[in-house]
Image (cartoon, rainbow, N blue to C red; front, side, top):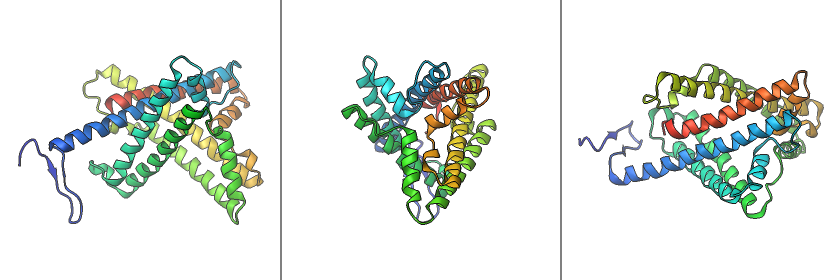
Length: 284
């Protein structure tokens, strides 16, 4: 076997991939580039959500602390139109990369059914993000805030028989998923996805701190959104459902809410910064 053509043969009926062939190398570079652009796009959005959250905590802004608010903030800046279309390309690239992991993963640890399903789900989410961002860039209409989307989703489900229980189940799933996200962040399980051999010890620690803080904050928001869905199901009141913005604003209304919201703002910004680190050192 040539040293330039590394083959990996799997069980009968599975595919064999020659990563060393020129066409495969070219394809991998394009796909990896799209994936890294997606991480950059995600980083931009979360940095802006963190900034908006900080402004809300300091009573300087009443806009939405979610992707819609971030897009509106970008659109109001010089060259905002260019940045918006970069986000479209980044989100579409991330969707393509995730779809490839779902259909034909090139790493053994990504070939499990659970990993494929996770990648497929994330691909769908990024397709939606690319579409809504493109629509906003073209028409100036973002399609509603995360709060409105959550309320509409809950209302539609509750119109059907058993919908109330389904809403509660979705909420419980979000709570469990968010708690697993927090657990994984605290245990630094995400570190196995990074290639940081070229980094110094202090630099690697900073990257891990950003990942831990950022992913913990993101998990906390997922837990909060799930809790609001459960509350909506228990009270049979779709208006009690909340998206990212509503979850953060509810936090602001709690005791020491301003301090808690500032901490969340820093956590979301940390996740944005960590996304840039993933764009540079993620194992794709």
